[in-house]
Image (cartoon, rainbow, N blue to C red):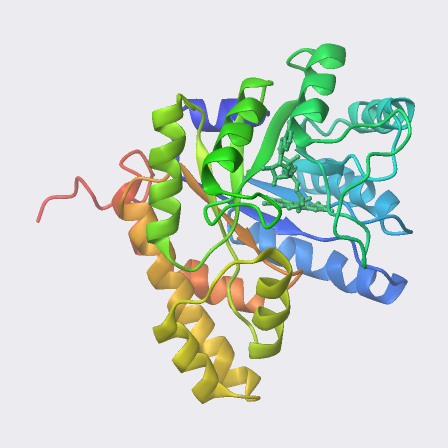
Length: 308
Ligand code: FAD
């Protein structure tokens, strides 16, 4: 099932999970144990990120195909322009197609560590919109395609307006949906969606949420992607300090509140960056279950239309 088919129906909002391909065999084994635990939480689909140049790249398709084949879980491979010529991309796309995986999250990718500018590979692409157009040219609608959106603008973009214009180009190139970069202030997401709609973007825009598991983790990730932490949340995290259990409690509470507001305000889905762990997601999903029942009028366990 492709992205567009999920969001066209009245079965949403859809929960989706993102995992990453581990670097070591031991971590891969651990992910194999976590996958069924995540699937039990009822996501509509799961996506698998694509590494910078290196050995984990082959594992992206391995994990996405495993999800589809062994668990009948719809999945998506992330794919970037980094280090791949058009011919390389074609080989990768053929492999994805033969595996039965039907969805791709198409990205430009980040410049290699230590570099600030993205340099396109020889006979490769410079931007996400070109990769989307390439996939559509070669494969028509055989793949569902998602692209990245940035509620707080992309780090390299000189201003919000140009970033939004490029975002619109990318959607027009043939994306079915956009999934956003992580953010902690819903006002940024709503303002991004409103601006995109004003420019004429009509496709679903799915908020991407990263539950906080430790202060160190959130510091590292937000410094890489430029997302900001609201002052009240920052104060709670500072009080937690090096105590990861306490930071995780703050993270779970914050994530449930953030997701509940998004769901009640009618988002088509939520994409969780789950960091290859399931225990925090189990607690988050348990607390979101009543909210999902409230906003999914067609859900079998919905109480929305139950007599009072
Ligand atoms: P683009 O859309 O190409 O945008 C990059 C920059 O160029 C922006 O500043 C934009 O304003 C500008 N721009 C866009 N088009 C043009 C144009 N035509 N001319 C001039 N400027 C332009 N990275 C990975 O390596 N692997 C992953 O698996 C991965 N998954 C991700 C999933 C999601 C949901 C998100 C939000 C990000 C993910 N990333 C991943 C990170 C992503 O690769 C980086 O944020 C990257 O820097 C930008 O990718 P993009 O596709 O958004 O780029």
